[in-house]
Image (cartoon, rainbow, N blue to C red; front, side, top):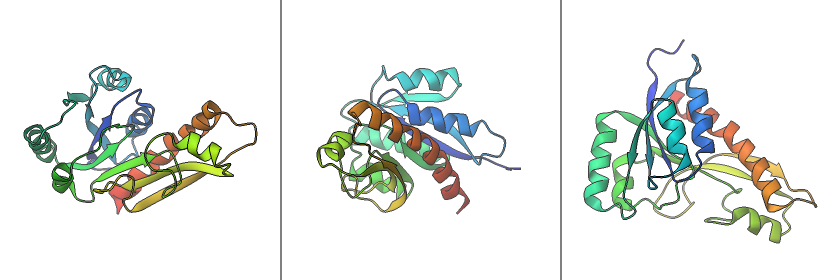
Amino acid sequence: MIKEKANIAVFISGRGTNLKALILRSKKKDCNYKIAYVISNKKNAAGLKFAKKNRIATIIISHLFLKTEQKKLAKILITKSIKFICLAGFMKILSPYFLNFFKNKIINIHPSLLPKYKGLNTHLKALEAKEKFSGCTIHFVSKKLDSGKIIAKKKVKIFKKDTLKKLEKRVLKEENKLYPLVLEKLIRS
């Protein structure tokens, strides 16, 4: 049995499907983490409702997220002994200033097989390039967009009749499975 669960913070901007997967896993007795904070740059992000429903503290950051606010948030997270920050559909690039507070402690899940298709519109890019596979990648966040050290990948076959929605749905299903597993493994190591 897990003695003390590691504190995690999850950053979101939208619906929070990966947040939900992380929360659901955290409720299991054999899970080695608990979510201490959910941080969002959008006050109306749907994922915030799920966090509040599960009695997880939420913090809203401004769109600008200036250095003073970054320092204040970093202090809160450090005081709470946050082991990892998980970006889960967080649509804001974190500054090098903020990243320096949490070296090798911020991870992201990206909906492509990195290093291919960094940034936005990954499913569309994969379909237009007539790729045979797409998928998701979990990586450490670095100063360069979607370029940090890769931790894990999961391939998803692209079918000839795939639409953007169908591919997105299948990749997201794999993201929801992979993220909690990788997070637990990182905490154990």
